[in-house]
Image 1 (cartoon, rainbow, N blue to C red):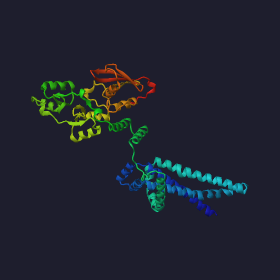
Image 2: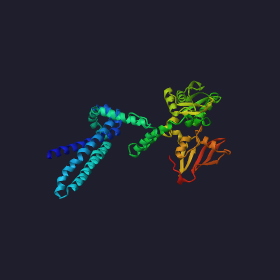
Image 3: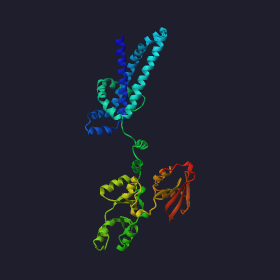
Image 4: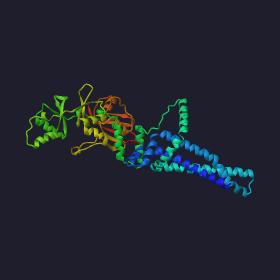
Length: 441
């Protein structure tokens, strides 16, 4: 009898250990990152190859883990409670309890003990271990789990087939293998959680967020509009064009023939400077013309960057739907969508596109993208066929465009503070009730 109880107790210990193994395997395989396993494979870790095999066939191996957990739980229910109850029955009998009382109390003790061991030792503890040490656990369990899957494959195949049939009966689609694919919103949430956990800093979070937002921008969102373009003119004397360079201090200038709708090239001031340093006289700027990149208003910002890289251009002329000039985009304008405002030595006096005047109080450039304005103010604005704050204001305003013209929208007052003719340059935007809005910069 003693030998039998010892064997049963040993079986109980093995079953709890097996439960812990399958639970740890299940959570480790879900938690582990495939990129980390690939790194270990590149370093020559043999166990990592087995772990990668399991990850690549995750659906089947998760089914194996579930089968293992179910079998061990049934085994514990079958052997565990009677074993513990049999161990405590002699002690309860010696206390003078009746036969019926001994049976009830021993059952309760056996059931409670096995339940405690199964939940705490068999599930909760290995789950926590697998989550915190996913890499080590994954490498440890992969080999035995592969063998268990091979041995139990007929049962796993049968059970999976039955489950998939049931899913189809209730009108759901079998998704097959578990996919490690994340949507853009899920990636944003993962990045935010990593930032809150200290894994990535604020700059890294902003850079990755800007990359996603850049994918939504088109040329008209980031271009310098036609009215603000600074150009050189083919028919102007060389001295006049030099005056433009001296006054504006840009590196590149579009060159126009008669007007801005006829751009024939662009000039890099470095080319002119090189000639001047050689003490050579420049009689015409035509010899320095470079062919610009022509794009349309609806060209995505990402595609603009790709074309600039491919064609080795740093200036693109934006055309409207009629083939006229809508504006110009420099490589710097595209990069600023990712890294933020880039200022050089000549930008020290420039006013930033957006700056905060106080709580819920901003000064915003009229050319600022309507997408960015919505994010800054955390409001919704009508954006169909509208790309800038100035365009949105003109679409909303019904009076004469002049300084101090204003409208109220979703708790913010938009006031024109800089205007010339029909061109708005800057707005003052102020929350009417700052305690009800939550500006995000």
